[in-house]
Image 1: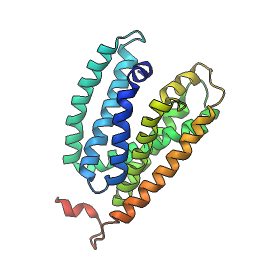
Image 2: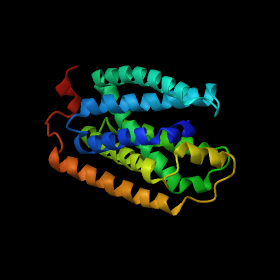
Image 3: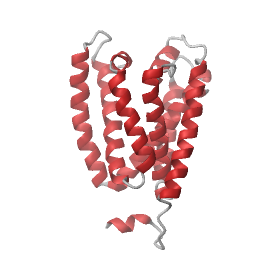
Amino acid sequence: MVRWISDNRYLLGVVLIVFGIALGLIGKHLFKISICLIGSLAFTLIATLFIFSVFLSRDTSDSTGWIIFGVCGAVGIFVGLVLAYLFRLGVGVLAGWGGFCLGLILYNTFIYKIDNESGVAFWIVCIVLAIAAAALTFYFFWECVIISTSVVGAYCLMRGISFYAGGFPDEMEVYYRISKGDLASMPGSFYGYMTGFIILAICFSVFQFKRYGRTHDDHPHPYHRYGK
């Protein structure tokens, strides 16, 4: 999958940059659309990764890769629409994906140094943060929407830029190299991307909080505005 992404990085880079900017700036304003987009993206990436990892080899052709990606994307769109309709679940997925992206960043920043060849720490960190972020939506609804869209938007933007500029190791590549005992340290450019990610996530969050703010409501739970 890493090789297939690398072979198509220029096209995917444009998609990620546009998606990241839009999500970071208007994620809360169009939160149902954000749920649909992130749900579709999350399902597509996870399903594609599973199929590539379990059923395909490194010699798989690009055309086969695009067919698989297209099928997973079509199913992902359906999943995204369902999550937007069942937005109570969808907001949890939205926040969970934000937590997962944060886990990827933290792992690549320093946690990989204490991981062993099994790569267990990678999955523990990402899954725990995803579950914690999803759980927080029951107490901090709109705050989680804003922060999650800002984090995911910043990550997608920096990842999209890296497809052109290079120097930002892919998470699966890092995981694979650790499992082979072939990773001593990250390149210096990686920490530049991390700095950019942190700055963008903060700027996106501040912009959305100032532009859209928190939805004030006397009701103890915001879900009541959308029916039973």
